[in-house]
Image 1: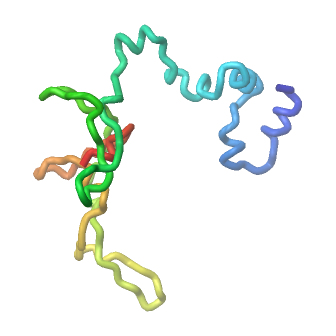
Image 2: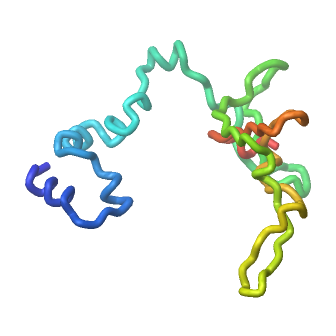
Image 3: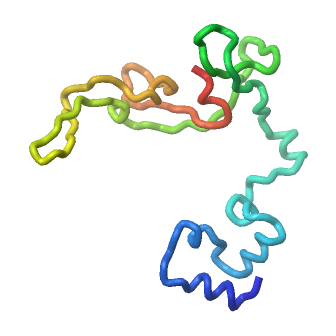
Length: 153
């Protein structure tokens, strides 16, 4: 990577998502050229085999697919026999602090043609609610996201 060319690119007067995604310095660009982009943006993403064996989690207990049951659609299916208490899949959780965020409201068109929601007229819940957990006495919702969990219903 030539430093003069790199500096020219970094000094462009406009910014875009592409330019913003570039490494911040010519040294980082050289590192990316030899070690890959994750070496600067996700240095903890690569683990040794020893680390994986001692601390890793298996993510292959389920696979996605089409059900053999009529009209059941897609879903998550076990890839091996699982006993009671076995973990099916691990997943980070998105915390939604107010379950009102998933409310769907009746809309009203104003005289100037804009749509506004009628705050007191809830007509349903957003589809994401099917995949979240929460306690009836709490406003907090926990929504998993990660490999395959969107197929668990």
